[in-house]
Length: 82
Image (cartoon, rainbow, N blue to C red):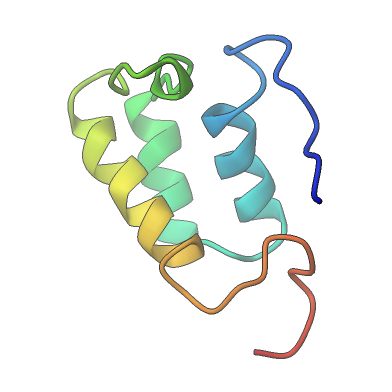
């Protein structure tokens, strides 16, 4: 059985922190990170079934998912050889 950490604040946990963590671990491109920052994306509603805002950020979130979950990266051991 695997137990993950709980989300305590949707503004800072969940999708918002996952994208930041992925950038600082080298899992997403500099261009995607720059685009997210330039658009001032808010991903806080994504984990509650909502959409990222502004609307352009929904596409950035999809790219994030492709670069992380859509790859061979093990989320519990991101530094393991692929």
